[in-house]
Amino acid sequence: MIRLSIQDIIQKIKNEETFEAVAEDYSFTLKIDAYVHYACGAVHDGHQFRRELWENCLHTEYDRWFEEDPETKEMVKSHPIVIAGMDSRFEYDLNRAPNNAIYTDAWGKELWKNPLSDEMKSKSLQKHENFYKVVFALIQKLEEKFGVCIVYDMHSYNWRRWTREVPTWNLGTANVDNDRFRNEIESWRQILEKIKLPNDIVSTSKINDTFQGNGYFLKFITEHFKNTLVLATEAKKVYCDELNQIYYPEVVACIEKALRTDLKNHAVAFYNVHKV
Image 1 (cartoon, rainbow, N blue to C red):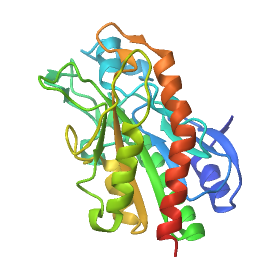
Image 2: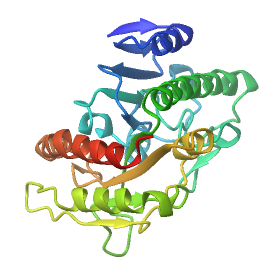
Image 3: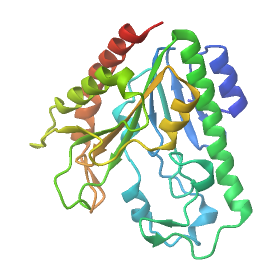
Image 4: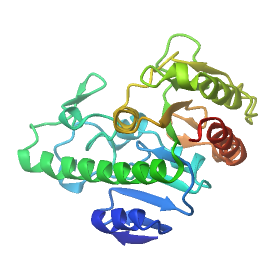
């Protein structure tokens, strides 16, 4: 992996170069092993938190980890194109629009001892802006090259805060073209439901049950690119003990192994139906 400026990353995309890079400010990573008609995103995978913010933050490191989506990049790491955040959503949330990407409170608890200065906000929002400059260049290239594109927008969610049974997988489809992509949405739901998980974990999959797919990553791509389907895919955090901050690596590995084949096959089927 190499460290590159935003301008260099975008130029490499325009030139259709393969590369694996971290942004020069270490805010996100992008891997392109080959230019294919699909990409994977893990915008909440990051846990970094700028040191100059530590003393002013009322949330603990565990509080932040609890609301992030750890291991979501790991689940799709084998695929040719993967873009993932490295910074915590508590610094700035890549899945929110710029005007509300910086939290004042988080999940009912004040976040800062003192309000952030304009300088502190500006540093974070610049990273948010840079990320989306690269997302735009990437999807533009893929649509230009293939005519259509599909993006697997990977997230996870805490299930213990729910007072009812919730699905192992949730697809949020409120902001995509359900009429055009109905079959691909349903086939992806079925693929996820059939993943056999260890430790007697039952795999269930529903659409718009816990979340509806209202994230900015999905909305940004859908707004700018009419031939790209974004599948907001939420995994219930059965792959860790969310209360004790313990990972279950065998569960993550099982998901990654299943998606290595099933995700690719789904993307190929999508392309065969919708290619121009």
